[in-house]
Image (cartoon, rainbow, N blue to C red; front, side, top):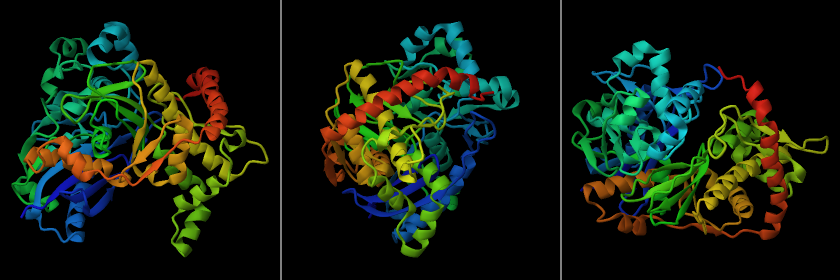
Length: 507
């Protein structure tokens, strides 16, 4: 019996593998780590071959932990981080590390193209402003700075399509990741040959666009030997991690909104009509016929990982003695500080910033420190800063007419009751939390389940698998306190942005 679906999540710091039963129960899961390389200021890149190695190892571990036979997997779904530019040659060889979503090295190329083609012309077709984080400028960066790579390139893949290629040999581009390329017509979901010519991106580089739940192939004999899956197992195209997480959080109807608490932060508003704004991000949902109006920030859960790495040596030593994680201890010391952190404000621009300010030179900033402030103030202010970034995006979305009544949280950050309540208080929105840790991989397996016919529809799949664990209502007294700091948050960037530009260290 083929009782299980397997989800593969290509995250920024690690891959996550999870095997689910039809009702959404996790049978087993595992992870595989890989590094991010920062060779120069503004650069952030990864080696896709290291993704594949980690995926293979983690799949074997997952099957072993769950006592699952490879033949019991009915289908495989894959989600992945956005805006990769994986250059492969005709033999499928990876030609260079891929810049990832945090990479802003191609700012000068964007400036040149925006002037040459026109910002409005690009935006009117792609539904997104041309920024260095996207795939488009990374391809042209190869052309200018790595001509030997550009000349050998046969196809440009995204993170999930690369893993699908390694599993099946099929070269594809799913609909939800199309937004990374500005020759993608956001209204029609097709490549635009004229814009390809204007951008000087060969249309031959671009794979065929397919629905996210479409079976693109089956696991090959070679891949089966490497990853432990059974030869012939169906694999669907998969999609963007934020979009799969949105599906896994149960957000599939217009107006429903996901709050993202992974390495990156942000939100995704489900919409049935095209509605673009240059300050935000517009892409297709993994659910056919829907768009996602998104806010994507660099300062999400990654901020707390940075805080833990740099300031939690003591907590890590205690964790070895007591078993209480260092992150949990940081939550506890932050909880002792009053809302508003006694005036300490943090700008979470730890790798430049994406929406809504789109500034690759933006920097992280602590403001309001004095001798009375403690580590607890700094930890809490960091958490509040991430929540302010979420509110900033929601405020911009509100000006476009996108109304948000409540948020459905996903990602590891949603495990923190303090942080989730803080986001509810700051945004003034109720937050519903389904199974936060598994929302992204659950979305990937729902795609697989629909693709192989295990579910009759996305509605049936969500009803069967998404389970709410808790709900947070905003404390409006705290909201009023936070709004004073939010004014400071917005003013800090406005007053510092020219200094950030002057001292940003971009090359």
